[in-house]
Picture 1: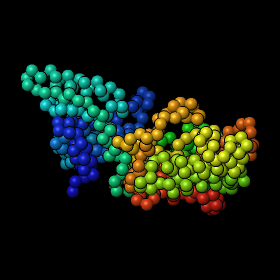
Picture 2: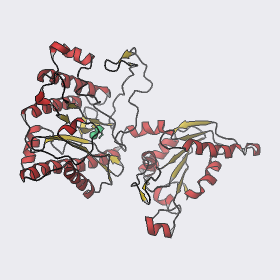
Picture 3: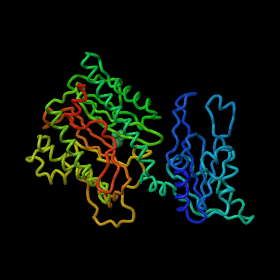
Picture 4: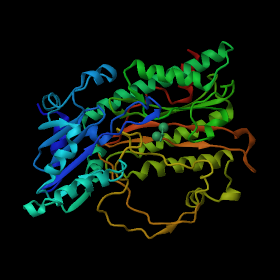
Length: 460
Ligand code: GLY
Ligand code: MN
Ligand code: MN
């Protein structure tokens, strides 16, 4: 049976054009300080095509389907320190590549593999200095043109092809993402329960206590890393969008916003829940929570094959704007009708981010948000907040197997005319959705989202 990685390599090779060669390195290792490295995490494009997670590896793929892997050579001394290496001899059988060499032979082999080819494809933006490395290899080929060798004359960004491939997740990817989301949901459940239990017991709860619970649950189910730095924000910290888990106390009466997800076998999950630290929402907290929840349901209802990427955002914003008018954070006197609020983006001080992003190997996954090849029909218009003139472009049409987040929120900072009962409340609800023919599958709902269900869970 051909592995999914071999199938992906074949699909990429078929798009390289006659004489096309793709060169794709994995991620570099990064020093944290002195002898300590940051944990190594493969490059997503490289892993997508190989399933290989050792550092110092490169894939070279030719349009005819031949694949060459460069990887770390077997080296007993290094393996005693750093762990077992696959090595070039075992790589063809293990990974299904046509041939493999030591990465130390990269500069010797690549110019030869580029001889008499037409174009070279590589990632233009993800690797520092890669284009000068490619130029160096091409110069070596050019030095041999007098011997009758021809040199590729075109350089192209291989990510343009890979981004499109990665945008629609195959069955294996969807299964892995379901597992990642299940683990993350269980971690959120644990954090909610710990918060209520510690407060009931009169303990000094800190944001890092809840973060520790998340990390423990991720790791004990085999997740290799958090997919991004966990946000555990108590009270007013929830209004800082990129807050991280810190030392702040989690107090009775606070809301806690946790945005955290694990990475499992190279795939991210991304879940946000907002819950009362002690397990019971106050009136104003509940009022805003239910608006955000209704907005999230509206965004989920707008997510299906054939809809546009922007549709869930627009559906969510409409509900949020109406909710802001209903509770008096915006007023008809000052802000006009719902339509006015939407057109002038009057909701922006309370909802300043988008509702969705693609999710996959990367938490903000690759893939164009604009429908390729579709003509622009709308005229440029000025953004009501920044004044910048922007050209609206046709939003991406959703297809089964695309995966996106649905993450509306409301963030209320103190301000003139802002009812005090809502000050410092920050709420976001985020789930992961696989687009299906008739709707979407919310794969992260093993942690409750309904306010009553959250309270019940935290009483337990
Ligand atoms: N956790 C990052 C995001 O929600 O986009
Ligand atoms: Mn997200
Ligand atoms: Mn998130």
